Amino acid sequence: MSLRSVCVFCGASTGRDPVYREAAERLGEEIARRGMTLVYGGGAVGLMGIVADATLRAGGEVIGIIPQSLRDAEIGHPGLTRLEVVDGMHARKARMAELSDAFIALPGGLGTLEELFEVWTWGQLGYHAKPLGLFEVMGFYGKLGAFLDHLMNEGFVRPPHREMLQLSDSASGLLDLLDAWRPTVVPKWEDREPR
Image 1: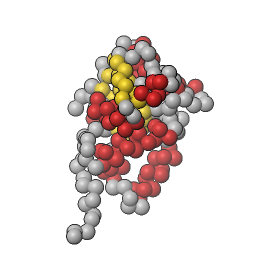
Image 2: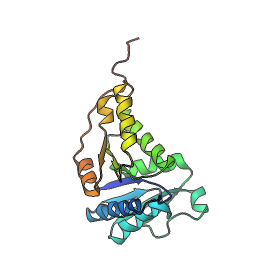
Image 3: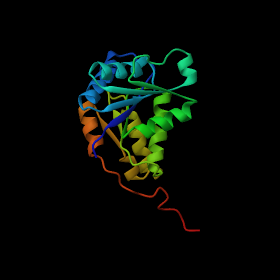
Image 4: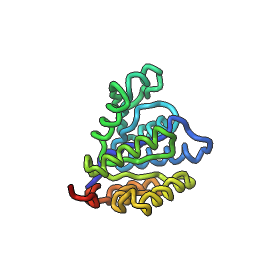
């Protein structure tokens, strides 16, 4: 599989440390360097705007998907290759997933986590077979990784589903992992008692 497009979930703020901004810039530049299309939430603010601007500056294509309500709040990015306006958040996530071959979460807040976990759940349920990754920046996702391991160890997440989520502290390394990833088909309910 050769990735042609990647969806990036990330914060609408930049965080407190400049290292988050730098990571978003590195990821955008690497996406463009590989000739891939960035798909993201269409915002001009926070890490969203930074990853989009970095991709565009490096000559890459950027497709933004934004709900009308957020565009009306004037946070839509005006300089994208294409900005699609949709009816709401559910339509936004579905369209981003449709256009993307893989998913990456940069640091972010509740929305970033919600988007990541929803698309991960879709993969677990077999709605798609696309790789997911966390861009690890200064240990940002370390505690989340430990908690996910805890869920697996307690029997709430199957090991192949846990392994769907790749992690790297390097933009190029993470994209390499996602490009090399191959899905393992494991039924979610394999241990269910027959009726």
